[in-house]
Image 1 (cartoon, rainbow, N blue to C red):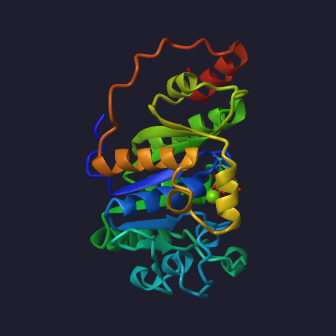
Image 2: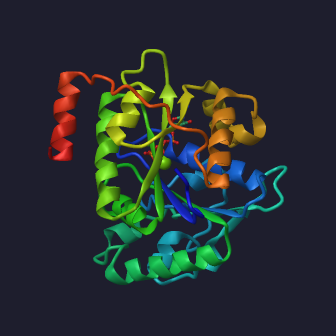
Length: 279
Ligand SMILES: Nc1ncnc2c1ncn2[C@@H]1O[C@H](COP(=O)(O)OP(=O)(O)OP(=O)(O)O)[C@@H](O)[C@H]1O
Ligand SMILES: [Mg+2]
């Protein structure tokens, strides 16, 4: 499968806490290390975390929410982060932590907000090679907006039954918005995992780009506001994230997908899968 000139890719999961933000910051840095100008956009308007992971200084009014509310221009809210070894900095558009907009009468994603988001994306495309969007958990308003604005989508999923069902629902939302799902990253994989890569690939109808193990280096890097791909490049998670970065940067998913024997899903999971699929 060819990823033609990826311009904006949303990382979603349905279920919370599967590693979307961790994946987005590390993939962004890894692609920056390959020489690209990458911009990360925090699509999580209520509980954003890209800025916290990267230890960005909070700057009131200079965030994606302010752009959506018509109070700031996209060009004013991009924060450039230097990635050691990369020629071009990693751009970050934080979503902002102020909550007052959510208690107001006007929704942040009003009709005008949606139009402003479309314009804001055009602004980002002009100055970058690739935009990576960190979607919020769940599949409601802001998650749906993130899925609808991106050109392509990648699932970040835990290998558990609940996570795979939520990811499949996310797949259906992406399908509704005609955003092609290019692959899935299985994260926090352990030997006891309930869902194999083969099963995930069949249920989600998409190739598994990597199975990233549970890796304490990721926790350590998060504590230190570091990036595994920069500061712990030999860790198992960093190696796999760099491999996915190359896949995205080259615009290709390398090699042929192994022709999987359709794995037998347990009958309970199969019933839920059919319900989600409406089959
Ligand atoms: N492979 C891994 N091994 C160990 N810990 C991990 C791994 N991937 C992510 N984590 C940890 O899991 C936690 C959740 O990760 P993260 O915040 O990236 O998830 P998320 O999907 O963005 O969450 P949310 O849905 O709340 O936005 C973090 O503390 C992160 O350090
Ligand atoms: Mg997150």
